[in-house]
Amino acid sequence: MSLLLLLSWGQISRVIPSENGSIPTCNAGSTPVYRTDFENVTREDAHRLNMTIDNSFEFEGDGGAAVWMEGLDRKTPGITCHSGGRCVGMELTDITKSRRNEFNIRDLENLVGNELFVSAWLYLPADWRLHIPGIDWNWYQIANPYFTGPPYLPYFSLDIVQHDITKGVFTLNFDSRDIKNNLVTLRSTPNFPLPRGQWFNLQYYVLRDATNGKLKVWINGVLLLDASGISTMNPSVTEWYTTPAKIYYEESDTFSPYRIWVDDLETYNTQPVPSAILGFTLESILVGVIVGLTTLAIVRRRRKLASS
Ligand SMILES: [Ca+2]
Image 1 (cartoon, helix red, strand yellow):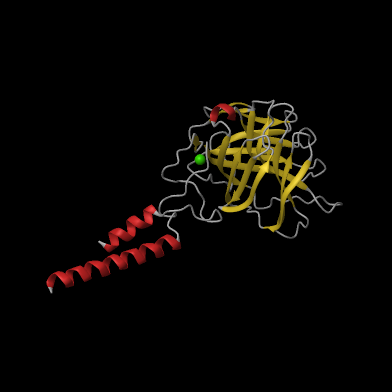
Image 2 (tube, rainbow, N blue to C red):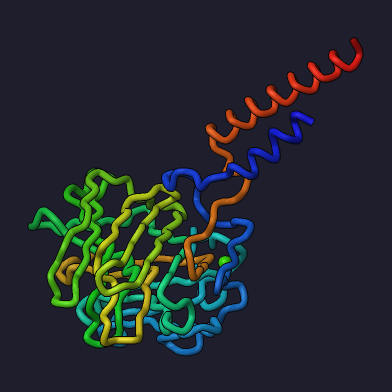
């Protein structure tokens, strides 16, 4: 009986654990609006996938960038998709023609409304780096959690800087552009060990609002940004998009190849609720133990009184 009470109390008093905790996917009670492991996805044309929702790959010039279905169009040596046999490959082939290759999920106003949570698995090659000989820094946009239709403001970019090619650490800049194109770096995280040569999980949550928007960003389940009261919406533009994977380099960097792979994409219209098991906190377990022991003592006392 006490064990039953303990367990039921644990369920009742369940609270959402720290967001620095486990990766909040695969949760009971949270259903993605859209999910794909890309196993049945094909290329519709050079700029789109046949993935049942509106998407596009934007380049600055054809012949400078490409997208393919890994495992179907190509089999890149050393690349194993995160799930199954297929994932999305993106690359720049000629930086003089395009320094940009971005994977956009479009039509979010109809897909999720004004709240968006995205989980995607990304892979950067083990020798991936940013340094340009002759200057001491370079920058790269790896994702844009939100941006709007024309005039493309406001938007947010997850920017990466590598100050020293000999060190495997990067500075993550969480850069916001408001409706007037003012740049605000919401947070700068130095010495970040950006995973290379292995799959990593990028997640973000966006609440779309002209003045009271929210944005959270996680990498491998670690909450790196938790911003609120920011402008994430242009009130005069209905369309909004998200870019879960992007290649966007300083054009004088001629290091090749610039590639990124994407797998297991999920979109939700709210932040997923952590699972019941992960939802047990030390506090709720402690309260459950106290309630259980108290109940046991009362039962024993009653039995003792009844038998006396
Ligand atoms: Ca897959």
